[in-house]
Length: 308
Image 1 (cartoon, helix red, strand yellow):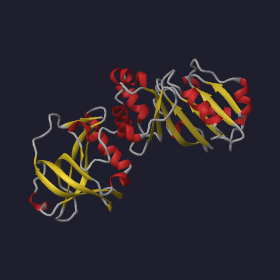
Image 2 (cartoon, helix red, strand yellow; image 1 turned 90 degrees about the vertical axis):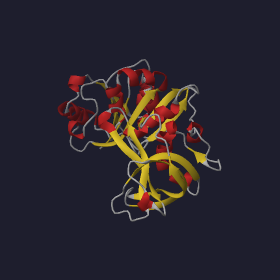
Image 3 (cartoon, one colour; image 1 turned 30 degrees about the horizontal axis):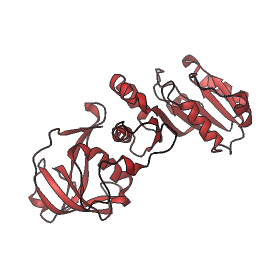
Image 4 (cartoon, one colour; image 1 turned 45 degrees about the vertical axis):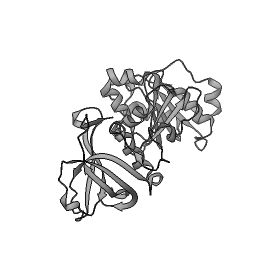
């Protein structure tokens, strides 16, 4: 039985999100849905709404969220699907499949975040906010404004869940296109990536590589050797920290360079390259390969580490 988990802090907009997707008939294939609320905010589910869409709503406390109790709910309501409006403040910060009854399979994990409070939570509750962003399929930042650092929000979510779909929504409910979030123009003759913008560039090119095919880019990176890559290849990138020192990793690109055997691992270089999208074992799929046109020694950036 498919289980949909909608996670987020109190008043983040979880209920509004669920009501919107159900009103759009995205769950119309399920004749009966068990809706489990792990907390109750200001926005409510009206009786008419529940009845119209075949929803059986149950409010549970943390101590009641057990396999045995969930099985009893399944016997009582015989649902075709389960939707859980989850509370990230519970001790079980994220739902493990082992916490669910047999045949209950997590189909989709969604996190809803109020962008107007994200900075506050990220500063004061970093570990919890990180857990809500890990291993999810979609993150919705709602109530966004143009004066917010939205590219930073997006980087934080993308770094913790690589293949996640990220949606940024204005206060009026309209979706913000990804192109409006980039700190550079994809139409530039040479796309110059500033040191502080490396993170969002990396995330965007890995998510939408086709948009960069044939483009000329200029960026700064640290050289690293590749295993079994051949004499003409190496990697150049940056170290990235997502939330703590334990989450530090090197995020770089495969580079092709005629004099690759002369480069020194650990050296900082300024690269101008044409982007090709090719299959590489390092990516286990098609990904960006930097065909270097120019390269020179570079002064290390002021911050060696990129923080996401």
